Image (cartoon, rainbow, N blue to C red; front, side, top):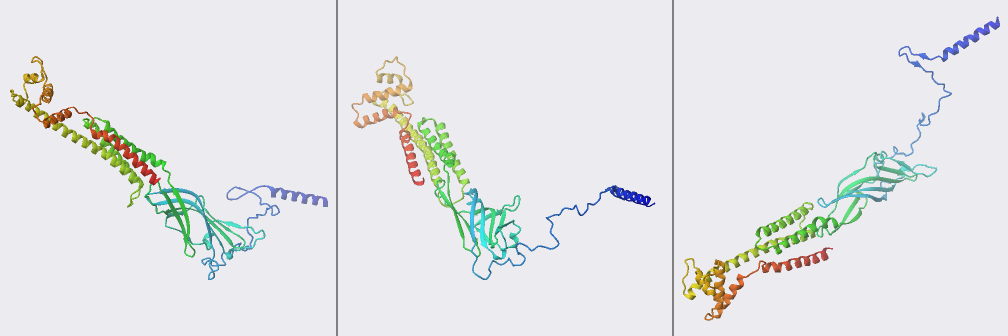
Length: 417
């Protein structure tokens, strides 16, 4: 009997153990209910804070950080340095420059001191900056500035055990720069980035900027020089080719004025003359003078031809008066008279222009009874009849214009370079 009782008790315990290991279903959702692990197998989570709150490393809540360190005592020395990352842009029109830099501050705040066995510093992000005192440094003459915040605020705060603080931030600032363009584009500008605080002295950071001239040589000086040289081509064109010389002169004048307008559009409106203005306006004067030169040539040529035509008509009328011969109604000698004066047979037929030339030649050869003043007048008339196509002004301009422009360039580049 005792053995039977023991056997029944053993089977009962075995059934209870089997039933306890079977998965159970929830009555409402029908999901399997997994057994909870025993506390003996539970791992310890080291990231969780215990019930007792540990003391803070920095006693920020214990002090009023709206006041500076050692308020009421001597001034706190604050160190500062700037590391320029890039000079992004320089604007002559707005007279400013944009640069990206790292601005660092150094000071000591004993309220932030903390015990450390290894004497190692602690680094924090920008959230702690809003809770402590930092120097009130700002940029003088700043137009725009911002702190970079991609992918997080580019601010670093490092605190040492003895209370020394390093505060660094990455900033892009656009500041004003008073530029002097009297030697533009052969100029050198000095721009200053000024940092100031309400409690500390002002810090000056000077930048010396030297302009590269090659871009302006290609865009301004070289085209202006070509326009001046192109205007000299008209000196080698026939003075009777009015359309060719006038169109060439107008083209060079308009092109030079366009270059001047383009340069001034990209520059600020200043009340003084720039170096590039001197070069462009002198070039414009050379081009404009070449147009005036042809106007003078054309006018003198017209006057010369009119005088010659009047003299020719005058001598054609005098031929009948000197020899008492019959004259035609139009004031010119007859064909027989012209042939006899020239010693040619009457059977030879001459044109009107040839008759005029022969009459003048006959009068020049048979004027022994005339005075010496008449001889000089006839010689002058023959010289005016035979003239070349190139005027004397064109001949002198071919030498004077290039020589003057070369002399101007020598003076210009020696003064402004």
